Image 1 (cartoon, rainbow, N blue to C red):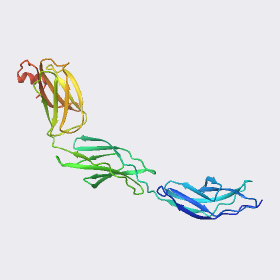
Image 2 (image 1 turned 45 degrees about the horizontal axis):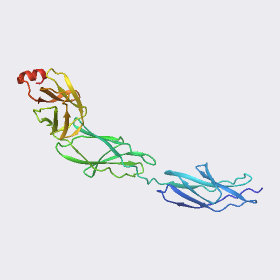
Image 3 (image 1 turned 135 degrees about the horizontal axis):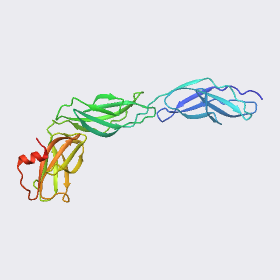
Image 4 (image 1 turned 90 degrees about the vertical axis):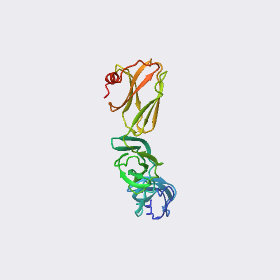
Length: 284
């Protein structure tokens, strides 16, 4: 049987999907008996076969060498066609990052987000402040420092890849670093039942903050975590089952360190001197 004729690659066209899909068209080969089909090769490796003289192929971004060979029903195969180099551009933008949390730590605001995804790979993230690009990072978090107290900033985040494609920005969110004048107020005070509210205002509630309610003997009767974030922030308490008449201490702690104190008077309180209360609560 006569050897199959070498075929020539005549045409290549880019289809949709960001030039990741291309269409190969070549001139039909000839054979003394008949051509059964064609093999498509990518970088010297057999990719697929087809019975017609065209093929649609999906490739990732990058540069590739494409060739085509013909074969007959007896298994004879022609030489591969002339090499045809093709470059697939990466025009796919990464997914928009998803914000996880905003943490107020010491003199900084730490913003964290879920890692973005991309068809090739995410190279990093841009951070925008008040609409202007402020910084970039390869991590999925960033600590904003040197923030002017009591100034409000609008932040947004985008992801980018090595081809320069950038995702859309996240919805803008606000951060503010108030002066450290956090106060805690308890009301109504006194109360006739154990139903009251605690208000934090004038500063930032930092991570690892808790509120404790103490008896006059210093014993912890109740404890609750306080969510980190900006103030004002209020917490409701319904502790009728716990409180009898008396005076109780309410203590706010950060990382286990006592920061703020207040007294709660329930119903008809017993009378204690201020000095005795301070001694029993170990307050300065």
